[in-house]
Image (cartoon, rainbow, N blue to C red):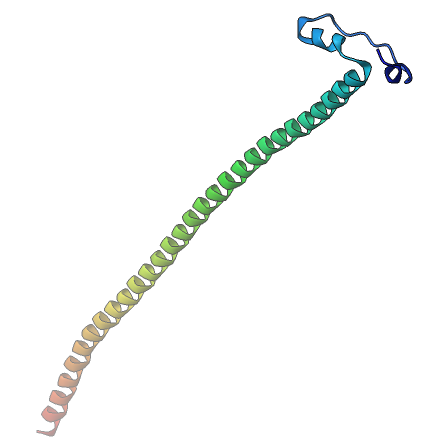
Length: 133
């Protein structure tokens, strides 16, 4: 080791003995520090990326639910509009039927009573003529 490696205060840490980190033990202290700093930076960015992915997943799920809700709402609104149109059409049909029935009743009434009126007029005129004779 060089003098610059020995001039800094060191902290002893314990790491599991694994073949995957064997190269780390052969590095100088300055390089070990860079590896640790770089590893920590990758770890932080990785956690941030994972949180972003998790948030992205949640955002996608929420967006999907909102889209589904919007589609269901539009479908239900369409059904409500169709039912309102159907009710309006029924009201119009019933109003027309009512008007037709009223007209039919009025026509029947006029026909029946006009015949009676004509009959009574004829009798009256006949009676008047008979009396004058």
